[in-house]
Length: 530
Image (cartoon, helix red, strand yellow):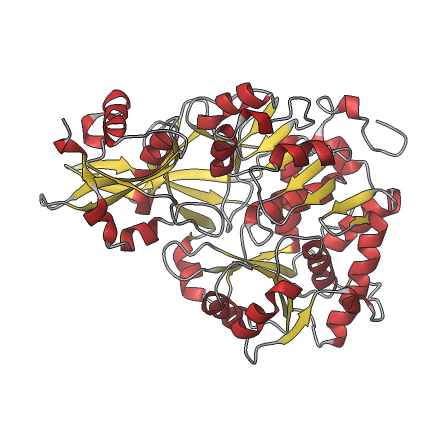
């Protein structure tokens, strides 16, 4: 440890998370107190880099105070909502800090939604102020007629008298994150400053973040992953955030080299895309050492191809971030989604888990629904008491995920309860089929759904986006299924699509596939192939 409390680069793999989290003055579990403690130690260090400019820790704190002044002059008070409609940028951090300073609630929204989709969210959140990037002015106006005050992002927002005092408390409502809405309208998940920062501190432990890390943020800052892990993890560690508007496959390795990136978060689809990009895009002398979010099914291929030493996975939901994690130094068991992790400074896991079926805990190795009790749990669904009550049994949150736990306490994902295909009396995991066929070398992405069968249950229909550089045939999919799956799991129908519908967080929108009336007409019956 250096005299400033910042770990030297050569200590990257040796330090404990507790050292990083205690190497600065203790904060009080408010977002602004955390940033102030980092800025007090090294105000001139770079905190944020985006495509327009960069901020030091001191500059970010000062500009957040100025923005808080503008929000206060615009009528924002404790508990009010401040919406932001904009692509990823440093403004997301400033608006979070400014809102939190007033005890208000930050509501980041997907800037790529349509006006009607955003209108539903804005009506529910009822923001006092709607901030937007200049290129989303027309969208913001169409989505929020008569709701809140519209303000374009720009220097004029930083001309007010600053709010120098942090007026918030750890248990103040702090942020609303909207779910993807795969089973209906998006739900507005409300979290406190405490749950936000507990998740960030847990992320420091997961990926061994330290102040010398440069963390690439390319996942959307209206989603749990980028906000609760990348953003608040970097704040907790005192690391630098390099914020990109969105993921670019062609620019990824060039960006890693240009910005000397050491850590980033991905979703499984991004890892799969990078593995199938042209070899000449890869920079073998890259600085990337740690990736969070690579699933176990891709981790071996990703490490072998790109020589990234630490690939960490985990499990959480918008409602309950930071529940499970895989190990930093070693690969998890095949198919594992992680196990409970201890919080830095404590020998106790941050969360507790049960696997329940028909109201009873199941035995080791048996499948049931995952229930979680954790201090990072949401306050509830904003303005939706009925949905909130339905999500809990006492203090236990019902995830809707079917899992099993092995003898060594590793958890294994089986399926979403609503992603089970019932075929010939058997329950088939749609997620298992997605993974199996997405791993085919000539497939970009695959998704399996159930469609009605003449026998009264369901048949498996597989939708595939083939690699355009390959010559994938229906018979190749049939043969792959025969080689890797039991007959009951093998898809009967196959549809090729140039692209699959995705949610705002990059997951396949299976509810849209099930609504697509053209799929059956376009499908190939694999049982009829010679």
